[in-house]
Length: 216
Image (cartoon, rainbow, N blue to C red; front, top):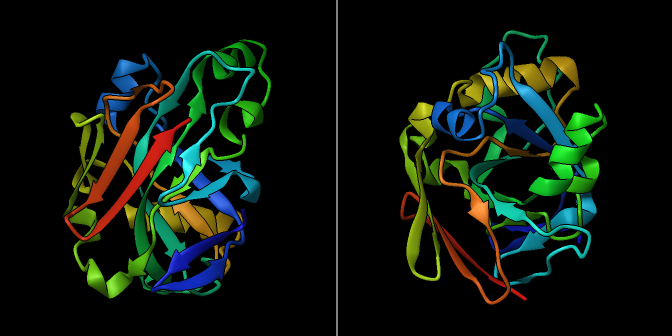
């Protein structure tokens, strides 16, 4: 799957950028160091899973974790080098799950190897439908939640980001260049945990965007 739904229309995705370690409480729960600049990694387009789909856990992992996040959809190109309001390049907002094969990630990190197998498996980038940016004018000051089987597991607030949306966009635009159709996962708060067969997940962004996924 290389497409998402935006304003009830199908849109092709370009790159998928993800920001790691962007909430202090999540850094603490995983005992990681606080970054001095945004931690950026990527997922392949084939990892996209749209709202209402079934998550299939990769057979090579025994510990896949959910990570609920605000997701940005970029609407126009920017190299970040001109004096512009980079938040103005956001076309839409959604909510998603950055799924992580935590056991695989741990082994790869110990060897100093890339995390792609832990972060980029099929279905590892779960996303809601996206709404126009104007629908969520206070994106840097809104709450989002994840419930699993009816139990609240994650409750985050975008005002708690270490690197806010504008800083994330500046880093990505200047370092890599942003293109229309890029998606950006902005980081997860505390409360990550394992997924299991039969789990039912419900995501909510500020009461404006919702998504549901079942685990096979």
